[in-house]
Image 1 (spheres, rainbow, N blue to C red):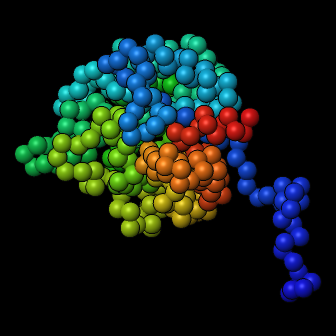
Image 2 (cartoon, rainbow, N blue to C red):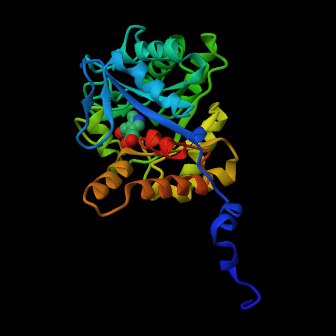
Image 3 (cartoon, rainbow, N blue to C red):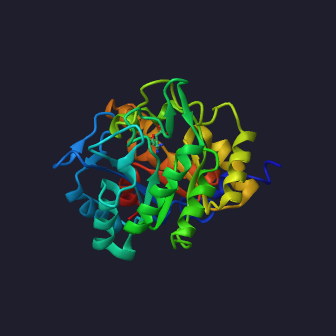
Length: 324
Ligand code: PBG
């Protein structure tokens, strides 16, 4: 009790450093990259200041910049020149993501882990993450699974170090694990977007990746933000199906979920600090309302403190620069 106990004793200078419980390291950052088959020069994005869409010719340079900053991994999203009902530009050996993976791996080899987002929404003309029955206005689960398996295998063939399925189809982790194993990729890990919420914080990403839906929304497959127990079931199922790393997405409004997932499963846990979380800080900083660097640091630190081992964030390079 006061006055014997004074918590302020440990709050100053080196003493404060000594008792710090959580720290950020570039080792924990994953850098998201957008490669666009339709462009020849880098394009700034409107809703995510500082994030660019890159032509194939620029991906290796950008990845090298991240590697030089000490970032160990990136995650690739593709924007194809051709979209159709089945998302058929997602799995060809000469499609954009497969080319970008080869480009980056041939430049950087073991110096950069290349993770690929495995989903169909950027490749389908209707913008949904799976096959669609238009008459019923339904997104079909089971017919989507082999396509996801095929896509993951094509990424592994191109040299991807890990695949990250984000489509929230039931059984997708098992389907991808079997497809990888059958095609001689038993050592390629899966980072599952296990607890992915149907969130309005993805808005800026959908502008950048041109992946908005034409009818309905993604709430028939992504989770209800009101649910927490359900996230535990999603994570448990994905672990049983073979997920190596599990992800919670978004991050900041879902710190309770990150905490629960880490505490209950003790698995390598990732959190996705999504486009809307990034855009809010950027917008407030541009208005002079928030100190961008400090708020970025505090946000990422808080995600780590909640239990995330690694963070996918558009701030990856900025953060790594500060840590350096
Ligand atoms: C694709 C995918 C999305 C994001 C990552 N992978 C969009 C979505 O589900 O609508 C969102 C990332 C972000 O907002 O930063 N399924």
